[in-house]
Image: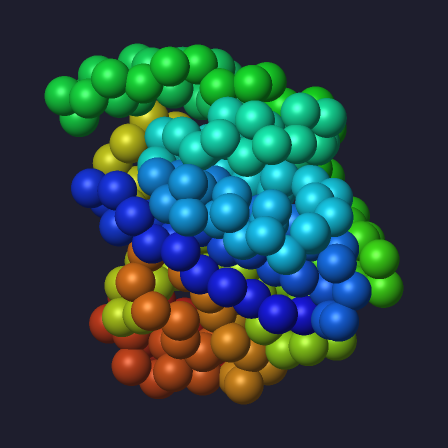
Amino acid sequence: MKIRAFTGGGFGENTYLVICGDSSAAVVIDPGAAAAEVVPQIQDEGLDLHAILLTHAHLDHIEGVSEIRAISPDVPIWLHADDQKLYEVAPFQAQMFGMTATPQPPPTNELVAGQRYEFDSCALDVRFTPGHSPGHVIFVAPDESFALVGDVVFSGSIGRTDLPGGNMGTLMDSIREQVLTLPDETELFTGHGPPTTVGQERRTNPFLTQHYGGGHL
């Protein structure tokens, strides 16, 4: 799979365009403020957009859904059910940060833990990782040693838990059980900041030292 990252907005959120090998099949993951940069690439390259996949429903990860839908009106929007309510109150989320936002097109499909999402010859496994938000998931490429992890873990940090529905204990459990169980060489494409690896975070992330359980795995 080919992964292209687009960063934008005041939160510096990473939107990802994932293309299946040499085919035209593609998915967009977490279309945020940089979605406008993704649109011309989809159009100019004649990509066949299969889905919008959402790790979670915080405003910065969904505010560009409508821009992707504008060029592909029927493309499915996948979200875990536990983040549905969060998705519906996107305008209120914006108010919390002194911003304004319009409602986004509603999700059409439900992501489920353990599901394998397939497009063309490519596949992404869905792992349930609540804690940053109630319905957060990550997408793991089972055969290509990478994962798109949203706001669960970052290079040297972890997702915040002070927003509605956040819980530090739950987040740490998610990281230990769903991220640190991946091979050390697994590349992690994060919702903010540069990519990293499982091994790098296990060894150096101050939140994932032995005190928190990272060093035990």
